[in-house]
Length: 158
Image (cartoon, rainbow, N blue to C red; front, side, top):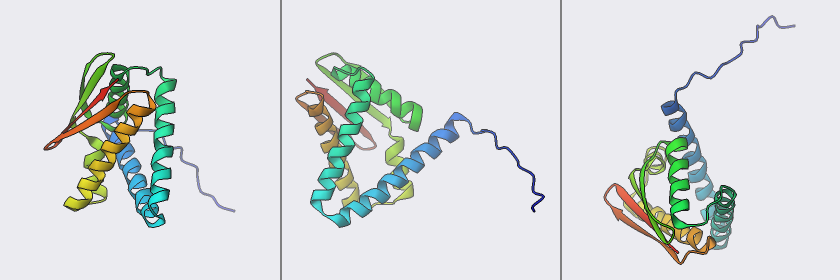
């Protein structure tokens, strides 16, 4: 019989530490998932991407998102609070944009799974395609992604 004493562990991390760990955990899982799915072929990649969009859209619809401005506000709020991204939003019910001044997910991916220039381009294109697919799932006409150095602007149009 052991004489070890149980020691309860209490949460002690501040918000910044929680965000760093949340984004790090998420990006490590996603990059690992992408590496495995890439080996399964293009069809598996398409199925995975479609499933991801369906789940994301369902989440935001449950929050009441209906318009482009609703969507950019909800996306930015989630990423700022959970991951620590710095995002500004503007627009209205017909067209709205969000500018990433600091994308915590992108920085975490570069830290935990360094990519060459070609892979960075592929990931950027994939992200743009996912934004467009999400826009269409909400009944919007498109999402346009523009990269400007470390900044990115996503515009959703109804």
